[in-house]
Every structure is written in C-alpha cells, then in structure tokens.
Image 1 (cartoon, rainbow, N blue to C red):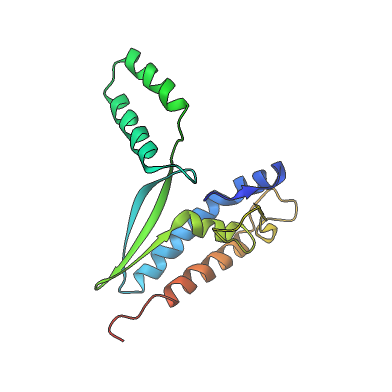
Image 2 (cartoon, one colour):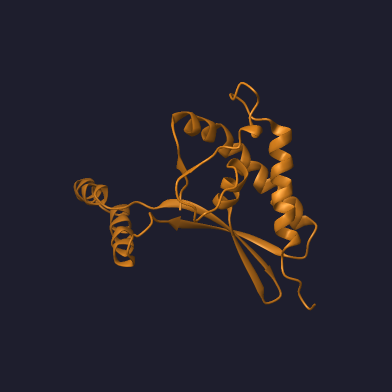
Length: 166
C-alpha cells in the first residue's frame, strides 16, 4: 500500500527524502550483509493498486507483453486499452536466506519507515513526514540524522532475524 500524503508540502518533503533514504537503506543493508552469514538477493516485483483482482492483473500483463512486439498501429490500440486499466509500479524486495530460512523485506516499506513518523503499512489516513530528517529550511536533507535513523532501522532488522540452529 502506498502511503497517502496530506498536502503539497508533504509531497515536496517526501520528494526530498525518498531517494536519499533509499540509497542509505541499500548501503546499510550492504554493510550488514557483509557482517553476517545471511545471503541477500534483490528482486524487482510489480506492486498493484489495492483491490486489483488477479484476472485484471493477468490481463494487464498480457496486454503489456503483446505491446512489446506490436507494430505501431496495434501498439497505439493496446496503449488505449492499458490506459483504462490499473497500472503496477515497480517494487523491490530483499530476500535474506540462511540455511532453510528465508526472510523477505520490502525496500519501499523500509524507505517509508525512514521517511515517515511511526509509519505502519496498514494504517489508514495520511502519513507524517519526519521533518527532523530535513534541515531547518526544509529544502535539504540532514544527512547525519538520516544515516542514524536508517542505520538503527537496518541494525534492528538484522538483530531480529531468526537464529539458525539455536
């Protein structure tokens, strides 16, 4: 579920924070993976708007596949059909594996946890930007605070991973 932003100010603040937060998340994950015997692989997945039925997802994917090899006239017709259907957006999952254990972590969810105050994926209503991650004039990232919050989140995830053989 994509978070809802309250207004244009929140939208602008999220735009400032999201890319730097995502980069810090990836870097901190890499550092933690270097220090653990868990193996991590990244996957790109399609995320669909809430409530999109499986049949409709299949139809959209079929039309997109047909479009890839279509002539220009057919592609235009397919584009018209696709315009009226729900569109997925790319998601990123980190699969952690150790022995027979596997943990899947949604990287966008981590990004939201960093950028928003008390973010919960199932919460209704608008999210609140963590403005402590922004400089006082709100036009730039406070890199030290962003790093501290991100590192704490990632370290907490790895500390909570199940022990193998215990």
